[in-house]
Length: 251
Ligand SMILES: Nc1ncnc2c1ncn2[C@@H]1O[C@H](COP(=O)(O)OP(=O)(O)OP(=O)(O)O)[C@@H](O)[C@H]1O
Image (cartoon, rainbow, N blue to C red; front, side, top):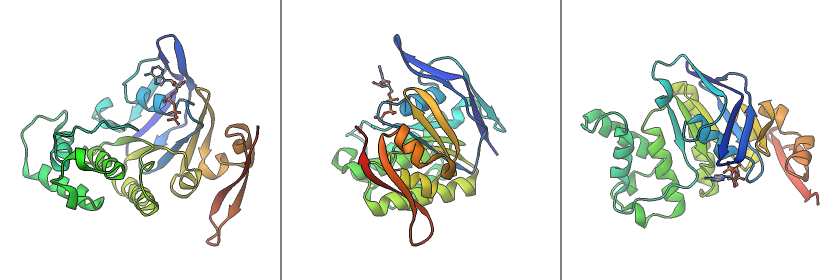
């Protein structure tokens, strides 16, 4: 099963150092890692650096893959919709990226499966420009999944989704990671989603890694105070699962 580890990873935009010194333990396939932290902390920059879309110091070590860096897929936060294409065409284009343009029956089966799994098969022949924000976000997820990456970096993939779709997509990703052995990193602002769906959590603050480890060890009252500047409690819900309850901001 694929795994990755980050050593001394950093990134710059011009002279601005947006990220430095990110070291992680081995992140294994089959698990979901949340990447959390305040606005402008460097979460998207970390993903772009792992995906090779920005340069900088450090190394992304990949193990147990014979595909190399192209096995990493980055699903950006903002996906500019190409209004000319239908949903189906855009997912087909994503499926063929980097593998030649000849379309096989297998490609069409894969697209049908991914659209059905995300329950957007009814949108297949709608233009991207006609979709709602949440529908577009689901199409972006379909475009990422149809490529069958071994390492998937999802930048706030549920930010435009309603409550039902949020838990459906995250539950689906968790099951898919276990089933396929994919390593999934998800940037999230909803820490309750991290607690519920993510095995491990990395905290980025001010362009540095502030903490990492099993999610329940990382999301603590002290971390919420220091990094997020909120007074909050972690309480067990009626099902015994931990929930973050925010009381106030610290000014
Ligand atoms: N293309 C760019 N050029 C210059 N600076 C950038 C660029 N993209 C991001 N930055 C800066 O890098 C820093 C980190 O941004 P990044 O997008 O990684 O944060 P983030 O943690 O993903 O934030 P958010 O939660 O708000 O999405 C910010 O100060 C941002 O202004």
